[in-house]
Image (cartoon, rainbow, N blue to C red):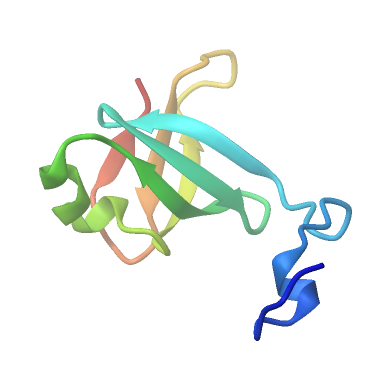
Length: 92
């Protein structure tokens, strides 16, 4: 029995309803979790770091929309471009 003012739907997690594609990548030496939005666009959902200065970098702020850029078709290297006109970030 759960006694709470929070609605029951908000307390229970239903994995079937929340099937959005997430991926964990390393951008500029920082670990971030990306949420897929459209074809090439992703939104930064979470920054995972023990360095407090990393949370002050505006390019890695949650909610920032970024886009993938591949330099060569065969190359595994991926570059990320911030859609608000920011710098290009590289995946290591």
